[in-house]
Image (cartoon, rainbow, N blue to C red; front, side, top):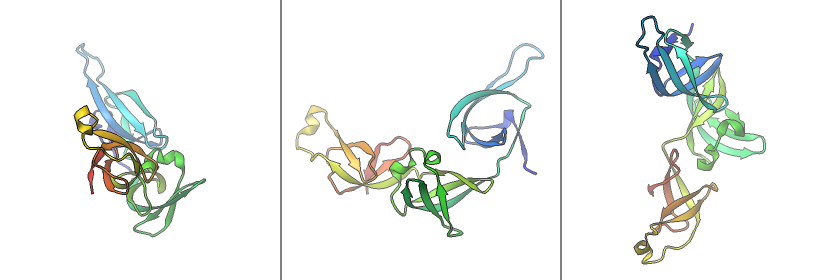
Length: 191
């Protein structure tokens, strides 16, 4: 039997199950009424882990949620085709398929062999967690010209090996490996 969580006990970055669906809590706001007999309400900004949809919902403080049957395993990215993307579970060595709608924009950060965390709900894969930073090769960028910084142009556009386009400092060259922050999609340094 899964443990029950009161709505008032749900915190940021916590997982819970609501209407047989796993959710991730992104933010919590508790409002306590001043009137006697008023109900304490909990407003949750939550992400549906199956559809990736984000929305706000208000619950009474005493409402209860189940703890979801979530499992996270390490997996390496193998390849993608028209049907989806394929990962190799690092514990069981099974190939795990994942449809493109469950990946979101994660493919922009994945190269063959990249290690990610694969989320499973009731044993079925539902999505991936990317590392905070990934290493990608610059496929194309304009050459930096001496004196560019004087005009305030300290960055330039670059296309990376996955097709992702970001802004990089002018000293970055084609063929160079760089680190990219997966959350902000920004240059995070050279390798």
